[in-house]
Amino acid sequence: MEKTMHYTSVNHAHQAIEQINQLRNRRELCDIILRCNETRIFAHKLVLSVNSPYFKGLMNTRYYMEPGLYEHPLKGIEGDAVQTIVNFFYTATVSVNEESVWTLLPAAAKLHVAEIQSLCSNFLLSILDIENCLKIHHIATECLASNLLKESTDFIKENFDKVNVFFMFYFEVFVYLCLPVYEQDHHSLSVFNNRS
Picture (cartoon, rainbow, N blue to C red):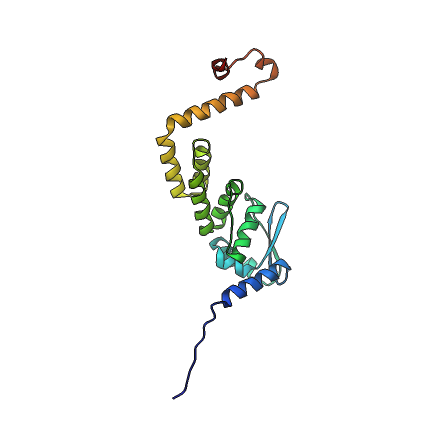
């Protein structure tokens, strides 16, 4: 009877993508450049395609099936956010914070990167409060983040009185600051009168 031994490497996939990332960092064998305004991001069509339905659909068009280096403009999303997403495709790691989440979620939504959409939505839920609930509700609506939209809507309904008072104060300050200087001298807002 013939003896057989089977082996499956647990490191192969990790090592392969690590090597591909090193190629990207050296701009070797890259076949696409993503352009967001002035930001240019070198990548491999294969890596983009297997990580994003947006890119998979794009790469299946006749234009991108020919060999060569292509430059693809991405409009309406920030270059830093796209760079973060592409880095995630190559490294499987990503970080989000209170500054980056506002550009990362729309980029992930446009490029159909579900893991990052979920991460951003969960992060925004973790910081949801009176001051940012309307902004979070707005981004949830724009990005079609259904769970985030539901949770932020519920939060606004439950805290409507507090949200209303908070935003009315800032609205009055905004109006006051936008008035021409000569009108400010003669105009007093209730918020400032009440503080006297």
